[in-house]
Figure 1 (cartoon, helix red, strand yellow):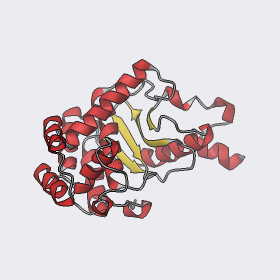
Figure 2 (cartoon, one colour; figure 1 turned 30 degrees about the horizontal axis):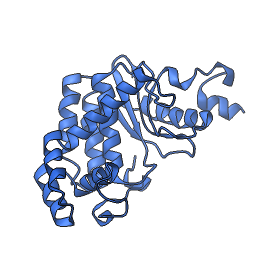
Figure 3 (spheres, helix red, strand yellow; figure 1 turned 90 degrees about the vertical axis):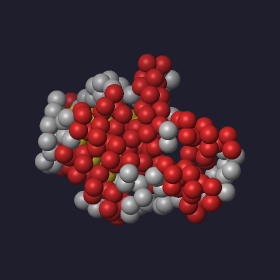
Figure 4 (cartoon, helix red, strand yellow; figure 1 turned 30 degrees about the vertical axis):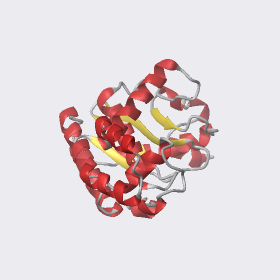
Length: 239
């Protein structure tokens, strides 16, 4: 019990504040969330983040970092993870990969460690690069566009919180593939591997991102074109 209290940084577990008061989550809508699993995952990220040395958060610099990070999707995971963390740190945002715990229900979390430093915490719960990229840009939207002291959990169907999540989803979709280009590509209904690869090349992104979007939008089956996707594991993102 002493070790548990030390980990959470509290003299009593009863003193812990509800997690939803201080962070914005990206949570699967139908997830069955275990409160303590989520608390533990969040706390591990907080401990790691407070040891990081980053600049004060600069919105313009982080916006430029987000644009630069989009161009990293073609790199190997170890390479783009290192570069992403550097770009974010220079803009005052701590970027962490914290292995998921069962029943946390979350892919990513955004929170402010102080008025000057933001943190984006990700995991690889689904193990594919397209979901990782979407989650990162979703969380980046919360830093750039929303007051993250609000609650962004969309589990109860709250319209206010849902609008922020929908806005973050739209930001992630459109920065990865601009709306007009996507609409034109889908209208052509050419979803062979060669067509997907050509479209991705013109967009300057990995073809697995296009495949993930096609599957998510129901344009192709979930078992189509998976040879173009990239599988990820926690070992791809070393500390």
